[in-house]
Image (tube, rainbow, N blue to C red):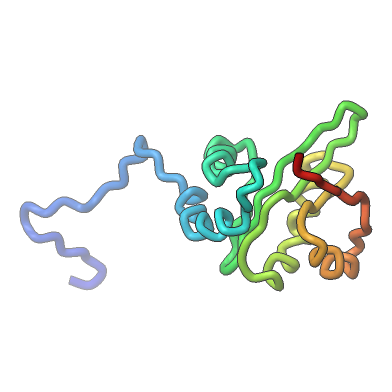
Length: 143
């Protein structure tokens, strides 16, 4: 029986139904969902459900790694700037930093002229060695 596969009588090999929607990206999302939810504060700007909907509908780019993930969107501003904007990240910071060059390459291929990373002050110190510079400061007052 060299090289032959033996199927017992009555057994059928399992076939994958290609009409069934299998989304490997969303299966990866499940690994990081709680981390994104934790990183989002109850500030009234975003909900995890909205972020999840944007990823599922492909209105946002989801980049899963082994132990970290980020979500970004392309923003086209009225003045013409096409910007790849990273809004959310979770997981291992060192891995997120290693992902940056690939994200930048993708942004260039998609016609973006800039990458903006929105986040906390600690990111400034981490990203300046990679060529990122302070662009703006956001101040907020709750009314």
